[in-house]
Length: 352
Image 1 (cartoon, rainbow, N blue to C red):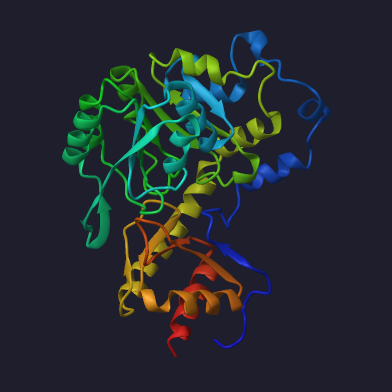
Image 2 (tube, helix red, strand yellow; image 1 turned 90 degrees about the horizontal axis):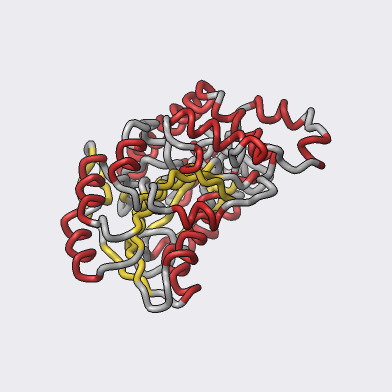
């Protein structure tokens, strides 16, 4: 493959969807009304935050007041830390995780305590694994104010199973625990645990977004399920003039088109399986099991600079990580089948 297949840059570095949201979202945008653009929400007059929070609460059988809307999951993470962590207090985070986890506590004078993950196999593929016993040991020693678990985790792609999560939550009842589920949906659409865990653990908050699975990153809309002890956070996050009405309506449309998103996820899973096979066959490469819309790949350190340059010349961008926990890995966002095939063939061409 000597010629560039794509004339424009293919952004496979920021975990954005290359398939886009439900086509029904585009149809709605063609007919946006004056009410959507010029009017404030009237939903507060009915005693709810929004039609979106009302819909989610009804779907999950919980109180509407337990649904918090936000400007994506990044927004609710920031608000949670800023509301509950005081100067000098600790936040427990995964070592192998999104860089912003490591920054947000310092914004208010707090400190990070990290728990490491282990490595093993999952369904025959190398995988990062949550070591719950180690996490509990670190929690007991450090007594953090807030604990963060990402499931699936960025950039490792692994998730924590329900049994281990329940064990950990039981051991951490003295802290506020945030489960960041920004990448929910790609590995499983199971929701059976949400209400039982909220009922049992009142200091729990489960955060989701419409940016990833629903491909609405540009709309900046997310939501969280908040336990009954988090009343202060609910008040802190409330916007009395409402939220972005267009974003809300796009989110509602996306929720109603599960068939479209299931088809996209199936294509992504097929390409992840292809990546596992292809990268495993390349000397020095190691792909990790992913339940997300990306895959983490370890590769020889000495090729990173030249490979990055080679891919950019072919209008391909992937995320070459360079931080304390990741020195030889790259995170690759799942694109379309055409993009993914072009990427793997380009990497093979690099070796010719």
